[in-house]
Length: 86
Image (cartoon, rainbow, N blue to C red; front, side, top):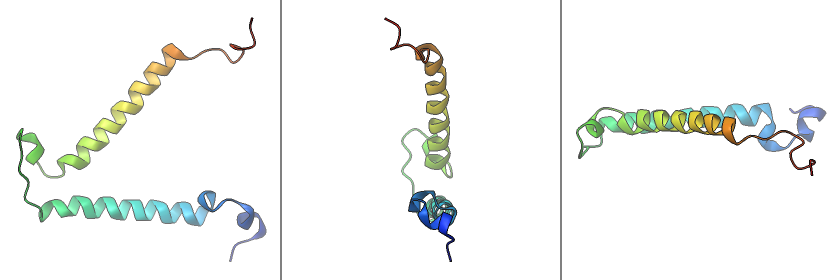
């Protein structure tokens, strides 16, 4: 049963929903990696035939995009008062 404070929150920020989404996401990821045992790959470059290639490649690519965005933010950021200055 939800208490009054938890019930007033949006359903996507409730602790129970967040836990359910994490568990569901991890379960889906595990099923996709395990599917690699049953699906015959047709590698084009060789490395894309390794076990779990699309899983680890996607993870590495996502991390690289986050790091690139953070580095780009260093050059593009402005002061909080940027639009106030005339």
